[in-house]
Image (cartoon, rainbow, N blue to C red):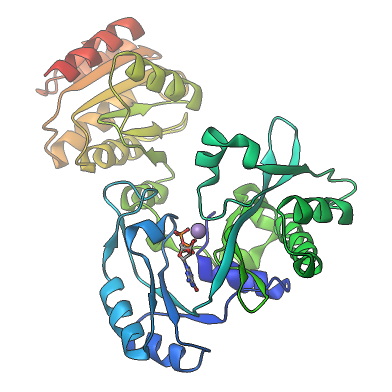
Length: 387
Ligand code: GDP
Ligand code: MN
């Protein structure tokens, strides 16, 4: 689960990690009122969305007057912010964070995540702050410093000092920096995070070191241990179609391709996505209707796929086991009664009640491209692309 920067900074404060003074606002008036009570000028207004790269997209603005804070908030609230991480459709800004502006001396990167290969948490740092760590890893991997953490021992003082010295921090900053790194690991461990990232961590002209940005991803599988954190979830940040799918307990994830898929079983869904890629197309979604799907779930799933304007064709790939082929066919036909399909649909059915399923589709009066194997399905998807 992702949370907003202002929520992550509140957590940082609770763990004594220094952050700029600030508060979240939902209106220009509120933003101005907050600025009046903060040190400044300057002040910084930051769009609160679940995506980074806001600086590049106009979602982080520095201003010298409290009126400027109100104006900036007015311009940002309600806007659709497009950043390198939001995708072209962008994200709606519903709140802004107003902060004291700092005079930055230097920007750094510091983060904690899980090293799956090493099977341990790892603290990652770089003196190249502000740059995306993925880009840095690809272009200048030598500029990334890593400390692997033994979970039994925890994050050690010598590791914090190692990082601080290798970052080339000023000797007067070492003590504050090492304390900050240890607290960052405390956050990561105590809250069962999958990632904690500070990009940039900054030193200022007046000799402070602070987390200028804050990103926390919580491990969904551990959320049951943190009931208070569940309240930080912001449903507005979820994709509208994913939210709708959640209501029907459908395992749906929106992707950026144009072939919608409906499959039963996560393994078959993965194989189907591979098949689409191999056919030269890209999947528009992942949808596993699961073994126990009812006609209603299939209907809703099909409607959700069709509601995605990017979808130019659909591949239904079902191996009828617990989910019988006739149930699937009825669901699809039922959905077609409520919504105009409008795009070609390739269907590959096999397994329990396959004859009955095929009969339902064939006599429905709707046009389906029936594939009799995975290979044939791939061929027909390739055909969709050529249309
Ligand atoms: P992101 O682009 O979404 O990761 O947003 P950040 O919070 O990282 O902000 C982007 C950039 O804005 C930072 O790297 C800074 O260079 C700049 N910035 C943010 N706050 C301040 C501030 O208080 N003073 C100054 N001078 N720059 C700031
Ligand atoms: Mn950032």
